[in-house]
Length: 433
Image (cartoon, rainbow, N blue to C red; front, top):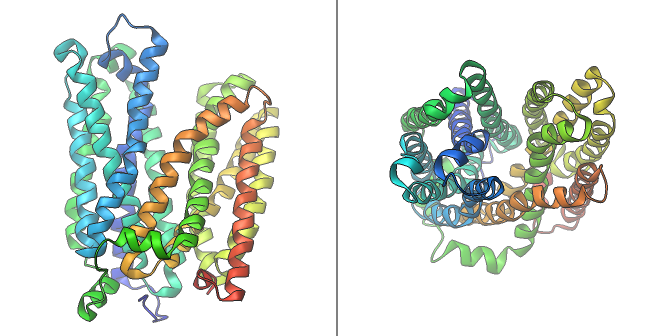
């Protein structure tokens, strides 16, 4: 059901990619901004007389609830995306993210409404998780089914870069707020600004998505009456087990590499080597920008060389660059920036992950297949990775480096399997086309 034409990207394709990437970046910003203000939120939304460790635990538990809500929200939205249309769910997901984010910015704290405050915060966080669970798979499917088949890698890589840009935007906004406002001003209401901005930007992105069209692939399925009958999830579970396994392994690679190298590394460098927070965050911004470039490069190469080769050699590069970063970054300021930039670029191999997934599942159940595999794996590995790395640090100061090496090995073996599957005509042969 994919489009067979080998045409170049036209103006409408670039418009679709731009609006999808912009919306994805803003939605990821809405989802991640919570963690940058977790400390002040914990102080304001929980009783002041509880131990500090318990307050922190409860705050991050609410943050984690967003990850746990992803599978259910993603599967429900994907079901209707496969049955009634990609565009409708694509627009709904950003609305479901924007409204809770706005509500968080206006939510009364514990001193105003007591225990109702953290309960409402938890509810809003769950809604955010459900929304992001539908947004990411839906966005990948939407752009992949719009562009020519030979440009799928570029489209998926560009969109993944856009999603990652939301993390960078959240970091920059948090840095700006903390630079311009005093801690007292932030606690008095300054923390609400990034949430209110995120909600308003989300509503703007939803408005702009009005100009997008339903995907040609879905329109063809409607015209030919080949839409999925019954429950798409049942079809996925019964007939596409290998595609699920491969997609979940690659999601582990994607989620854990970003968590360890981009989100956790600055804190690890500060604690292990006593580097300043300002210095590590500056280097982190450079690494994130390089990650954006890496995602796009990986997508372009996937179009030319196939996913198997890009994944295989990309994971070898990831292993090399990440090991150099974790072992040499603290030797000098220049080494920190150079090695972190190279590590960020190598993590860009994850840009090939959606390319594999959109081609692993038939169009009729594509949204559901990707959403189930991606969100379930992200809920498991995205949540457990920080815990695993922290526990392993007790045995080795290079635990984070060993963890990324293990992921690179998983990605390498998956790439080799994809190459073998392509030669043997197995289920995933088309990812190497």
